[in-house]
Image 1 (cartoon, rainbow, N blue to C red):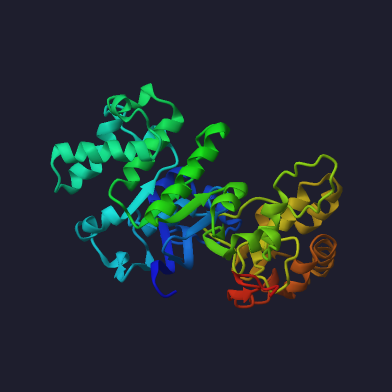
Image 2: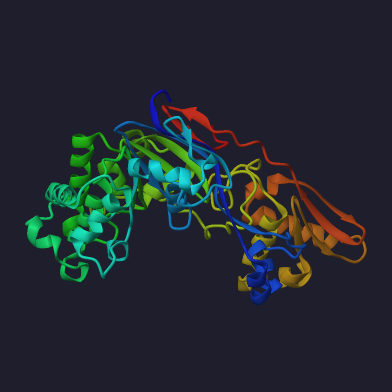
Length: 424
């Protein structure tokens, strides 16, 4: 994108799990997380952000939407260098922030600011509102105390903290939640940044105050030409504020495009599921439901291929099915009273293990009866998973179910937005 304020390329942020934590929790817990009993990696990582790219133009508001734990906040922090990227590039103008040390990042800090989600935690309770807003100027230096106070009072008036002179000496405990958030916003704009990362800036506020804060952010954008990375889990807020929207799921961007297009004609099944969950203000009005089944997969061992495929209502056989998907399916079946006979024949869940594309369990003889029963269970429950099976065989006294390798997942342009889905 020519003239981009920010350009992110293949950004990855992985958090290592300390082995002493794993040992205290027990190896059984880690096996449970992975849904298999194969050997665990020596150094497991949480794949918080796993290969994303996007660009932000001057004056644009890009909404960053997804459910809790998908990597939204980690992305925002990595963009500003508050969290070190594992790999990838973050170009702020023509400077790659991932290549800079903290001392080299400091001169750029005034141009990049962060609005935190919780205004109560973002302000020091021992500092007055005025002191908290003044802090960035003191850190950067170059102004006299008198000039600094004038700039702070002006910023307070711009964000609606009035009367500014009176609130300047108030402590955070003496003001409302909305006033605290206005103070956080005033501190962010005080140094006239070109990029602001707003991490759910209205999530902790009353409904009566949210619209005013959002209107304030839009007014500051018009006045100063600010560029926002707007992180939120509220689709209605994103629709009201943002020019473009990026939908994130388990560390990946599954769809990104103009806000109006994403809402009027969502392409990715996960985007459709999110929008279908928005309440309709018309009682009795029917609407299609596309809610995904199950829970968000574990970020330590994310699914192969499309991250959403284990929950996707329109998954394909080529989406990235693995041995652990079969183990999960059998475990779900064994929770049903009707399948007690199948449980006895297929064996307890502890007898199954998964390694990559293969699920296996020990058997005696030819294992033909188990093969037949397994094929019936899979066919009855999940057609895409059934069709993804490449072979079922008995080798070395083990029943082995092998899945076909997934089709390479490539983001494609679909009707003016970028979608990461094999349906297109």
